[in-house]
Image 1: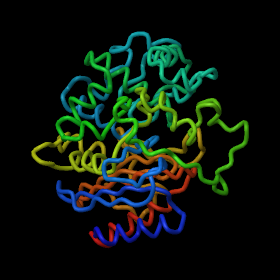
Image 2: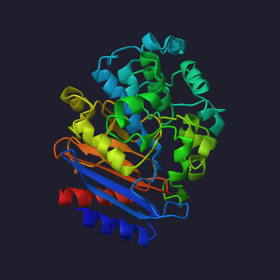
Image 3: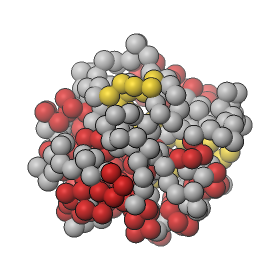
Image 4: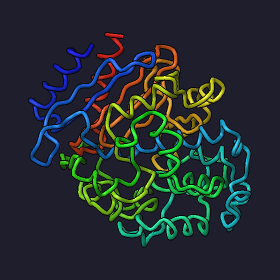
Length: 361
């Protein structure tokens, strides 16, 4: 499998489809592929320890912390957010539960219209704005992607429930036990910023141009919409903005492997919780994008461009320009793809990679 994947990555870079890319694969708790190709965007080749900003793939880290805390009884699915975070009850949000937040049905997908990149780095400002936000719908009645708000919501719930920041919880619950504390981050430490690959803008794919009145711009103003420019900023990379994250492919694949089984003696969640994260909990037309979306508790079932050919219990997270991580409890396989060519909606590399992995098994 490793040679097949390495040849594939080399071809993608040579063709210009990618600039720099990492792929790691685990089977039954053991790493079987660690492949890299191309340029990190800073004048040096991609290495196995090169860090990549994964945009929404970082929600895999956020959700993992949440399901670990659920597993440990820190809170339950039906715990009201306001019981942990009293200010959140404002404007009729008092009935919102942890389940609503983790299944994208909380009804607070939007960030304030005056949100700037600098504001995103101000944790207290962002969570105060969400606590004071008016819901777009009654919690639990609709599903809509909480692209930026998700990380702050889960992060503040976790912080209030444990007394620790989400970054601290990532180290104590996930990256530390897995031995990858220098490869999984929300806010990247200053000493590691020079290891971060820089994103390279690509063309906008046909069909991904959005009109000025699209609901996505109500969800987040244009200045903080995902872009290579935004995510190359050191202040954004250094801040805890847990709707995204910075990581390596091998650490991300290791996290997913530890969600479905044991990795060097570490298992992150129980079989009961695994059933929840690998089973569809919500299937509705998305209130933001108007297309069918499916969610488990904390993750997306299936792969980008979800199809009936996907393994039935595969779950994971994707970033909008083609980063991806997933795990399949039935095959014991997990993998992650990280890359730095920023082209909205371009999942061609991960789609072809998944086919290679499925065939090679």
